[in-house]
Image (tube, rainbow, N blue to C red; front, side):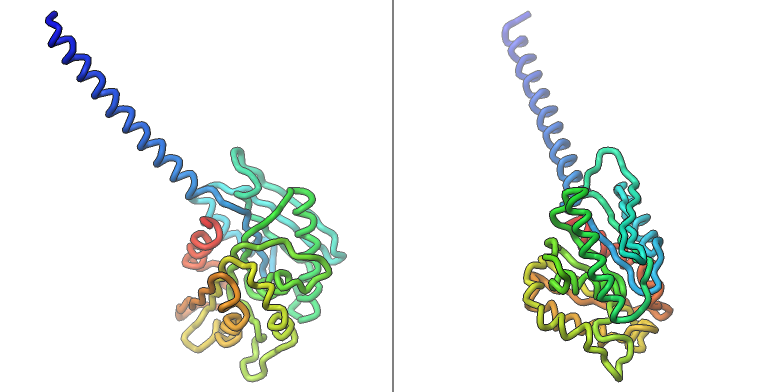
Length: 269
């Protein structure tokens, strides 16, 4: 076989190997990028509000699991402030991938109980820190759960709060539920301690509105009062309203739009 033909075949082979190598490198880069998108940087801890159940966040968990399976840790704080934990593990995941639901057996809607729940949350966070080596987390608070998170981050407990990176509040009544008579008992201490919110990377504050200026329970003015706490204090503050005619305070967590906000702002961050 002539040398020119041999060298030509060698050159063609080398060219084909180069093309295949570039293709594999590109695919590997895409796979790595995809992995980064689906892997959380920190766990997400969720707290519901008054008269809550252990299943309040089931719809959100189902939506998040549709794209990427997450281990779930359910933490119950009993009436006696004891802690019970149940885990649902997923192979190939770690604590950063976890969705942690904190449920209080006593979730009656009183200011005194919200203070008690805040101390209960501090106890939960110390437990998670000791048991799972938790160092930081993202947080979701629904209704009074947003007040509990805000009080915890503001340092209104007997122990130093664990660093929270990103915080989302849904239907949180910062000034209570009576627009004509705002309740400042829980709000004013947050104002005095708002310097603590500088540690937050981002806060998203979501309100529901039936076009009547409320979500049938919480006035918009009560939710948006959160702006005075977090705007120009946290690294970034975003305030938005879910405006649907038949929306109600009780079904805010079932709205698919809210689940998308959770994924975008708390899971992929």
